[in-house]
Length: 257
Ligand code: NYM
Ligand code: MG
Image (cartoon, rainbow, N blue to C red; front, side):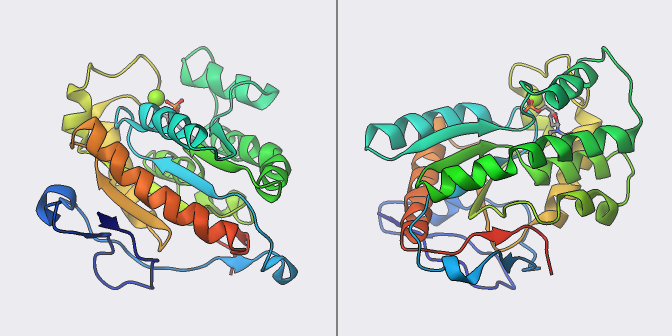
């Protein structure tokens, strides 16, 4: 059985404890330590005891397995009777999302700051809908969020604090699952597609910026493990998080002091 303790402010590695059936080494082959900067604030203290859904984000380099793990997770949660929705950013269905999609597929050119702000706007345009869904008791499994926004734009050379600024005040995830894989391993997985950013050298820089963004909501999973093992680890973390939110954990704001 895998126990997932709630996160305390951590100075060292912060990962789940494993029982007798699982080898710690096998599951916790982490490549970098977690840094702490808990800068999230309560949105509204009157909400403290209201039951709600959980906001769960999956992050990682391209080809880390995020998308297939989100699908598996949503199917599993649905199967055991949870109210759950699958989300992803960029959401290419909106007007802003179509501009992003055109940029990613190299059909249009945009200034680095302009595209960064569009990615952020794409999250802001969904913020209130996300909040409504959470308050209705729906858990949202989100494939990429603000951490992608900051890591990818910072890797281009933009200042990290500048990159974070437009996302300050969005809904803070209750749990961020980072699927940890080296750019070399990721590149081996059937190769990258043809989109912008899908290059090994660039992904190496993105990985470095992801490290800088870790906070106590993060759990890191070794994405080189078998798909089923990764899935099992994710399930346990997510069930724990859903329970906490059901008990009325307040919704927080991202990166707000
Ligand atoms: N991406 C994604 C960004 O550069 N900024 C963002 O805010 C987000 C959400 O878009 N390489 C990048 C990361 C990916 C690319 O994402 C498209 P996906 O998950 O491959 O559709
Ligand atoms: Mg991709």
